Image (cartoon, rainbow, N blue to C red; front, side, top):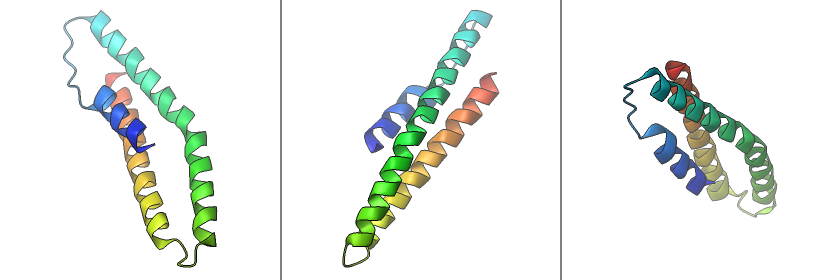
Length: 93
């Protein structure tokens, strides 16, 4: 999941868009819409991952604090990525 988030950030957010024509802008909007869809499709996988990790953490003697902390960090980063992609898509539209 972390690998996908890093890749999505590099592909969709770290590039500065410079448009010279309406066609280039339209292509950028289409690309960001695809990115937004990609993020939404990951939503199910994120929920499954979250549920599985919480279940596993509950079974650990320590209550899975380390695992829970790591999960929360990944979920926060995922939400941040989602918000940034939505924002960039909205700006381009």
